[in-house]
Each structure stands twice: as C-alpha cells, then as structure tokens.
Length: 551
Image 1 (cartoon, one colour):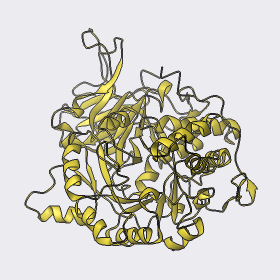
Image 2: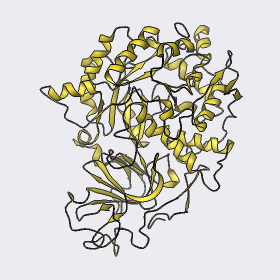
Image 3: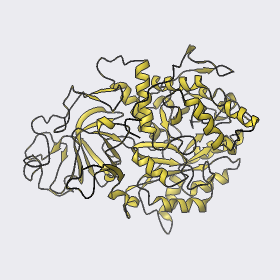
Image 4: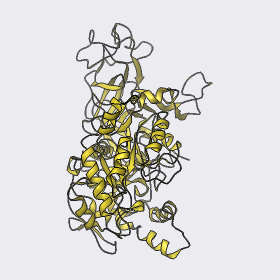
C-alpha cells in the first residue's frame, strides 16, 4: 500500500478506532501508475508531460485515498492550479497513457499521497479566538476554515465595533487559514448589526449572556435575511425571556444555526435538544460531550462556572450551572448524531470546548456509536465514516454559506486539503494544504540527512511564513461588505469567500443527514425520546485517538 496505495476491495483501519474503510474504487491505472522516485514513471516523456503548468497543474497529490463527503471514497490523484482543485482522477502524461484526467507537467510539484488519506480541510464554526495560538491548534488538528467570535483576550461572543473588526482583519492576514468573524447580534436595533456587516462580519451570534430575547433574535434574522448571512443561536438558558416554544415562534420558519444543541454549553434548560430534527433549525454540537464519556458531566460543571462568570461557592450560581448539565441529553445527543439528526460538530474553543480536538472527537464518537450499533454493511463502515466526515466539512459549509468554496475535494473548490496517515487518522494530520500550498505538517530533525528522522514534529511549513498566509488564507465576508470593498479606495488585498445561500439552506439538505422528526425531553430532563421512542446509550469507558497519540 505504501508503494502505490490500496486497490479496490482493500480494507483500511482508521487509527485506534473500530472503524473499517473499504476501498470501493480506484482509477484505472493498474500497472501504469504515476510515481516519482528512482526508476519510477515520473520522468520527462514518460509520466511527466513536457508542457508548462498552464497546460498541466501546479501541484498534484498522487495515488491518495480520496475521502469526499459527497462523492465518497476512492483512490485517485488530485490536481491543483493557483490554489484550486482542477480535477480528481488519474494523473500522468496523456501522450503515453490513456484516460488521463490530470496532466502532470515537467514543472508540477508532486506530493506523494501513496498510502495516505486525503480529506477536505475541517471547518470549525464555533471558535472563541481569545489568543492567536487558537489558530495554531486548529490547523494542527486538520481544520482550515474557522469562524471566530473574538480577536484577543476580551469578552466578546461576537464583535460589533468596526474599528476593532478592522484591526482584527489586519491581524488575521498572518494566519494561514480561512477565517471569518461573527458579529454580536444581541441588539434590538439593526443599525448596530449593519455597522458590523460593513466591517466584514460573515454572520451573527446571538448569545444568552448579552440577551437572546424576542427582539434580539428577530432583529438578527431580519438583517441576516437582507444580507444573506447565518445567525448562530445560543438560546436563553434561564428561560427568562423565552422558552423553546417561544424561540421557535420568533424564528417563524426562518433558518438559524443552533449552537451546542445538547445544552451543556448553554441554551434552554432542560429541553434545548428539542430544537434538533426541525428543518429550519440546523443543530450542531460542541466537542466536550463528544463522545459521551463517564466524566463528561463533572467536567462540564467546572467549565460552565468558569466561562460564564459564576462562583462555585455561591449556591444560586451552582444551581443554575447544574441545571444545564444532564447525562441523559448528552447520551441522546450522541445517538442523534449517529442517526443523522444532528449534522455538525464544532469546538467552542476556549469557551467550553477544545480547538484542536474536533476531528478526533467526531471520529471517536463514530467509534463509540459503532460499538453500540454496529454497521449493517458487512465488512466496512463506509456509510458511517462518510456521515461523520460530513459533520466537520460540507455540512458546516452549507450552514454558513461557504459550500461553493470549501468542504469538498472536487474540481473548482479551494485546495484546502488534509493528508492523514491511516494509523493517526483524525488525531494528527501528516500535511495540511491551504490554498494548495503546504502550511502545516510533519517533518523530522532538521539536521538529519533525511526528512523523516526522529524526533518528528507537527509544525508550521512555508505556507505559514512571511506574506504567504495573506496569499493563501481567505477572509470570509458578506456580499454587501465585499461590494463596498470593490469600490473603496483600498480593496481587500487577499482572497475572499463571500457567503451565499445562508437563508435558504435547510436541515433536510445536510449531506448524509437530513433526518427530521420530533425530539422530546421530559420537564426534569430525565428522559429523552425520538419520535416517541427512548434515545440514548451508556457513557463510553474507552475513547480511541487519545492517549495512543497524545501524552
């Protein structure tokens, strides 16, 4: 497998999980694979076509296991030009090989993909960027697109000051990621939100700590409908101004992205989970409760107290914190993920979540659920693997209007690609490409004679240095601000991703998910049902992709 990659029918184990991925297809290149190295086919006139990169591609990843949330799994090569994917298929020289999809020219940069897995870069829609190092943790985990709510050690839950947003945008030019900023939407006046729109926010955050009331939610939705951005909703955990029924009445069929819908991270207690399964509410989870483990409830209490300014020695604070924590809803949340009801995972980095753990916690949850409900497909877990891949790639892109640019490995999309060794899949990436260029990856001792000499280190690459981040990473913005920038004296001097389709997207459109139905939670939070049937499961005692890879 290390020489040419797996063949059709081979089964690949994913890290320390119980998940088994079967290779259903490989491009038709058996015996004639493009391969670089001594005495290999990657030579001029054989595998290399004597043409310029204008006629071929800038970069090619060869013979890699391509894992796309829509197209599925196969072994192929990926061609890129000027930061975008040009094709996924057979690589080589059409003058000597048949059915070549990707022309490899004499000037093409070759990345050996044999034996590795390629996925789209992860998309984390819930990040409190209280420090620049949060972005290091994100990219080092395989995330290439981040939607952040702060820019520094400040209390934000969304940003509103155009001056502050302008400084933040300048700082983000040094980050080798696609980054968008969410505006604070806890205002009953739309002019406050429009100021943030003109300062390039890519969506809004309504948060209970600054007011998730009838007026703030309605105002945010009205502005979002006009501009075509998404509203991230952290509902009223005290049920002080609105209940779940009231929030649904305010939404009135208008779409919103409901953050940490289980409730431990915040929201209507004890029944915020009942927002899941509705077509106009796109539900997501944050990673501390993924997978549901035996220590999840105890850890969540400490996080609630710290993150929300509560005191452990004050009984009233303890009571409202404990009201948010229910093992029954945590267990149900994990089951609803596996059923295809909850379509998105995210971190809630530094705000009750871990920036660098969304990939591995997503697939650790897949492992835990596979043990509770084994796959019906004999011999592989492909359907489950692709369902969980969609949670961190295409579905967050769909929810926030980014799916025309990121979230897939397909022609025309940004070449934000993560390469994984199967033995560390979802735990530690081997190489992260942003805009088709190596930005983060594994290298060995720099004084060694070969690049794989230990100690191996996962760290920044050339795409993270100098002016490269500004050329590679995109600013996620909105249509109105982008139009203003085009006519302004100084336009945006970096790539942009402009949100679109945010207001028409629905839960039923979530890839490999879209299951709609009724979640019910008893008044005391002790029982959760799906369509009238109990839903949940025991906490996991064993969590893969953790101690084996981190110590």
